Image (cartoon, rainbow, N blue to C red):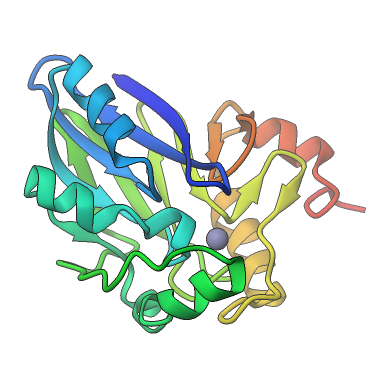
Length: 210
Ligand SMILES: [Zn+2]
């Protein structure tokens, strides 16, 4: 499995490129910005992007999606519970003092029970509301890898004080869905360092059992 992680946008969102070295098919997760650099990596590995998956509709995760779609022809996937938040990109840009990327069009909604693939590498979609209503994680079971968006971070969890955020929901998503994964699962959060489910189970102040 080819897996490149590239921090994009001023907020350093972890954009992932997942590729199959045999079929050269790829998916890009959270292309928030810096699409030229994303495309350079795609070209370096000689990959063909088949889908663009957005973990949630915050500007730093979705801002570059239209540019990448125009360059690759790949559809953009987002859970439908974040469509309302996606309509607020101008407001999000204003809060952060950033330039709005303009309108982002979603080609298809994805939710729990569905999979998204790059060649032979398939990820289960896990709908994990809380950071936003439509937040999803991508779980690659054979590779034991979780792309967690802004639901789980090394030592922390996603903020819930923005529109659509809900502390009760993020805790239930974490306890019932995310922490049900095996300890050895490598977690690629939406920002910052990689971690594992086992490490977070033992040390994350939001998750340790008291
Ligand atoms: Zn976010």
